Length: 161
Image 1 (tube, helix red, strand yellow):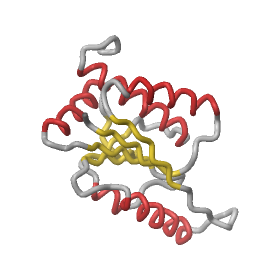
Image 2 (cartoon, one colour):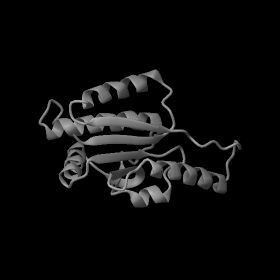
Image 3 (tube, one colour):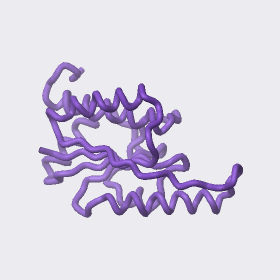
Image 4 (cartoon, one colour):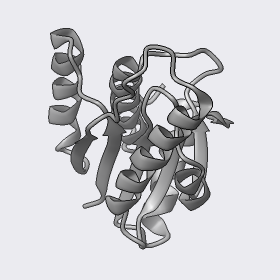
């Protein structure tokens, strides 16, 4: 059974997001081993951070993300400059990763300032949810739902269209 990880920066604070994510995690047990790996956000002491402080945060978070990725994992970096995909295309991406011998697919959601270039370079694909910006907590919920939908599509389940 394929393993799907969402590796992300920060904790979910709102109960309605945690409840929704928990529901999709429960549904996903029929299709995969689903894990959410939460890493703590780096803090900036200044209310108005400068570029150097932001770069330091992105680098530090990226380093910790990279420690959670195995060399054999298929990595999907969630970033605004990534490729947009339909739910069907995401389903095909996960299927193809599995067929190509990858036992783990890691979806990476960075912190408030984005993903370090090292994570993007490691990624097998860069994926954008939308050209719009979403809070990271909402992005995690939407991604969880889309992963569930992808498995339903590949199994011709109730959400396949």
